[in-house]
Image (tube, rainbow, N blue to C red; front, side):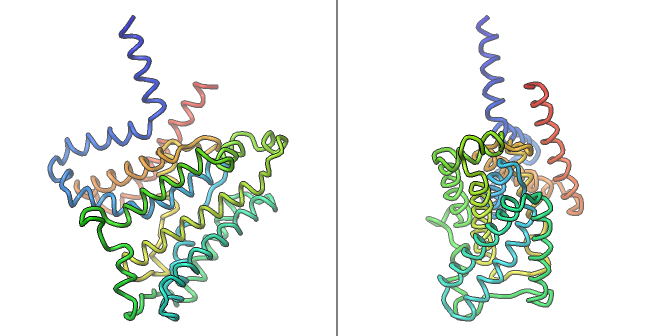
Length: 324
């Protein structure tokens, strides 16, 4: 009997922390396959740094999916916000003004998508598919298909935003990712609006009948997603010193959705954890890293990510069927 009790608690723990368990499983497999190479300081730091931008975007994507929506425009939005940041900074020579314009643009464009979804009852898939195409097309038109670089007058302080280390150890993008994740967790779990996000995704009609302004919640969530994309755009521009209208942000929407889904966020809405998304982004980062270390052709990386998304959704469907 005691062993049965222990087994029950173990299964319950795994069920409640599936994203963390998946990360630990992938991490152990990676250690067994590549040992010291995988565990080296530079490799671990590279995994964290390379996934910080997707990790930040995935936090907003998680909130959107919990409401029952989706945002396919995040990659293209990152590009057009990045162009705004660099253009204003280059023109004025004022970094703070450039960052402020980028953040405001991200919030407004995110809120625009939210308004189209909430007020006009358009499917989120169609709205964000359209804005994805618009943002990318406008970006390429503005830069004639090329890119824009930070001006030499402000290059060093601008680059320093993302290319310095805290205490010479922790890269700043990773610190931003951790700090924003904590803020997103507090918003989702400790605020009234955060609880309304889950309510909208669980049962929109019941939430509306209970007196909660569903439209307002949806617009706020898409605005938050736009805000987080703007922060990610600033990190990306600072890391590279430039943004490219054709290649920057490519497939970021797929990576962000994958991180959320692998982290346990239900595509049906109503379920999801910020901590799970953090673990999901780390899991995908380790998988990407292992594919590189094992010499998997880069053209197959997208196929592997697609299989991971399908497997995660199938697992969710299986669990929902058992709980029904």
